[in-house]
Length: 270
Length: 266
Image (cartoon, rainbow over all chains, first blue to last red; front, side, top):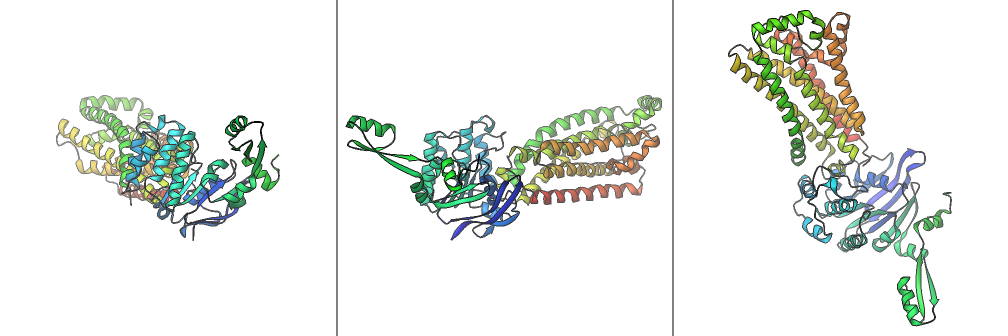
């Protein structure tokens, strides 16, 4: 069963910007990575799914409900982290979370757990928060009503590596709980750790949809290096994140997202 | 129909402005009513006679004999028009356009709450503010008149005048609100939401100045609220109040439709 379904979605902003005849779906219990460079149309697609903007052509549905017409029904079980957190900046984080809980009429609130997990003290004014703090606030607000479907727009931007990992752990946990997740990103590493399938979007068109494993297979190269002695081999393995086996060390090199794009398109950007 | 949590938050944000404007209105209303004094009025009338155009431009006319007529001349031409109007402009813009511009509206829309409910709630906040301001003005006028000049005030006429004033402000509020829904930039929302009522008020001032400029009255909605006509029980004045009320309702309904259909780039 497909939980999130996008069919022939078109939104033309002019000048080659927008999304064009975009189709893909996310199945129940699947984590879908939505990968693309800035301005590729990730956020535009997400805005359609969230019911912020109306499709010019094509349709978006979540659980067979139209994303524009039945937005408020979908939102009941949906958690969303916006690409840019800009909540009421006159409120403190605590006030905002309380406001959101009342506004959404949340009965079972997971807020306390989430605050502990991200070591986040929301007492200060949102206006004074750093990017990372706002991001944590966004994460707590998106998870606290225990939704079934998640939509994340570059969810780890602004987080330090430790918190990024905590977020990834949280996503993996939710996946085990059978949640459906759509996550946009421009960082390959972030999605490859969590996603079952990855869609690559560029200039508003879906370039490729593949399983994360296949993409990884195709874009990761392994090298066997033989070193002079074992001490050297071990420190080499440590420095280059490889696996040492006696004198032999296996290191992997991952292509950057840019290279992956070139792989799919040829280099027509220049 | 409305979301109580949002209503409470927004109403709280109105309170500060309401208190400031209530204080200004208190000052003017109490001072002006206490100034009602045949002796002093003669001086003021002389003033009006000396510079009729300038004085009538701000709604002050000669021969204001009754207390109510006096109040209409010195309160309903400027103070009680302008301050609630500024309230409408500030709140009308702050309720939708400001949040659309800074993106804060995302937390209202990305929730199991209909857009219609969000718009209705914000209208309720605006209308409550206008109601409170008008109600407070009315009570204040009644109290000041009762304390200073017991029995001198034609209460039923005053109530009708204030009902008209209320409808006028509902209408001004609806203008501010519809632009707040229509534009995603506060500069346009404020530009039109404040610009149109302010321009209309200037036309009203021109029309008041008389002469050929009087024709300006056909181009401003302030003409629809004419307390002098209410005092003289002119039939048209009731129809005019009704027109203001109906237009306000129509604009609020259109605002809701605009907001529900709007693309939000948040």
